[in-house]
Image 1 (cartoon, rainbow, N blue to C red):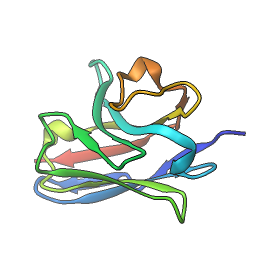
Image 2: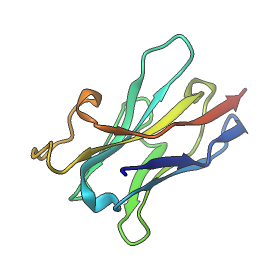
Image 3: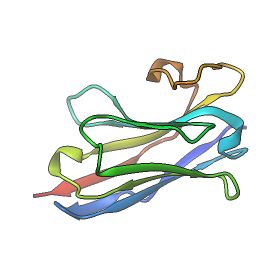
Image 4: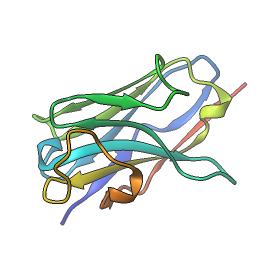
Length: 127
């Protein structure tokens, strides 16, 4: 019954912006951590950003200052606003979540601890 559904991907030119959305069943408050991950062709999946229940966010060095993760408990959405997009950002982006029963730390862990994953949304940035 747990569902994560991403939307908002697309094709943009370098320097453009996109906002990704993730509809999470039960709302973000049902999870200790939520995050965005991405995987480019031929590369390993990597963490992009995470946010905990206290709204503390962490970002990969490659996206700091350009991407912003946020959540809205009222409408049940997790967001990733991406600005100043570069061709290197081209990847399939996934929303993921850790249920509150599986993680009790203050800082969000690595991707192996995320129990729920969406199907992904493609982001393509042309030069």
